[in-house]
Image (cartoon, rainbow, N blue to C red; front, side):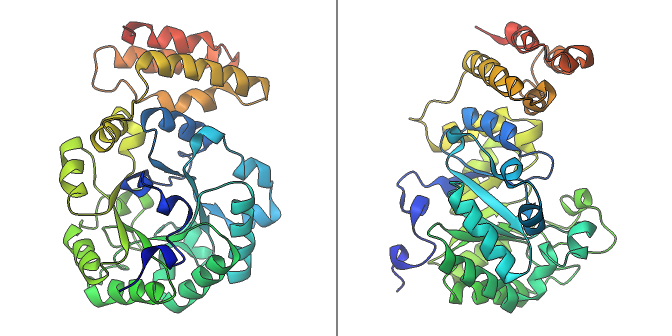
Amino acid sequence: MINHKTTPEFKGIYQSTDQPWRLSVAPMLDVTDRHCRFFHRLLAPKALLYTEMITTGALIYGDVARHLQFNDSEHPVALQLGGSERDALVHCAKLGEQWGYDEINLNCGCPSERVQRGAFGACLMAEADLVADCIKAMQDAVDIPVTVKHRLGLDYDDSYAFVHDFVAKLYEIGCRVFVTHARNAVLKGLSPKDNREIPPLRYEVVAQLKKDFPEAIFVLNGGIHQVEQSRELLSQFDGIMLGRVAWHEPYILREVSQLIWPDKPTATNQQICETMISYAQNMTTQGVPLRAVVKPLLGLMNGQQGAKIFRRTLSDVQRLNANDISLIEEAFRPFLK
């Protein structure tokens, strides 16, 4: 029997009684930037938030501060890396730890052509030994958890043996947290959007992985859109990861957070309005355009009367260009009680 707290992955936030992996928000390109994460933290005070996938090249050759800067309120927050070269990943994992991230996650699930050209993302699932080598090197280099996000298979190969062997390789070197998107990744012929919708969901395969590796944590990702669905899945898996629903209907993130942590208050509309006004004032004085701050808010009122006016107010090009922060209060006013 493995003692969880002596394995490489059960340290830091994973020793916390708050169980941050119970609810997380997926890393989404052009979505989960620091402004989005700041907003999501108001809705889910204990959820684990992920950065967009950041490539090792962007950190080694680019502006590190621009990519890694975040607000302290975002904790617990995880840095997702994209790459396949061990030394580069080690270097970037160390940067993530130095900047204060709570977890390093390796992307083995993105199917985009750009990622494939870089020989990382989902195509890494075909190179389990390489992934294991990279994960082990990062574990040895940092004192925070190193985890993996992966798919169930590649293209149209539905064999359980493939994903089982992939997980087994990583388990052998001490990886204990697996964020599993319960679909295959089709590398040719499907766009990233299609890859989120067309390959069939196979929750039963993730359940089998959990049965076969009972000492590991399996966080289920893919096709989770409703609160009651979340309740059912949380009874079967160690955690759930919300994807696009947290962007298009962020109020669901708040409701799932309340489901998991009923004693932890989430921000009311009034509190969100006041906090985002203060945050926008701070960000715009630092040169951040107002549109970047309000973009994550657009879906908050979806499904409610007045949602279109809410979005229209926050999308006023002239006022956004002028960094007119008063549009936030104006948009929220009909929803404040």
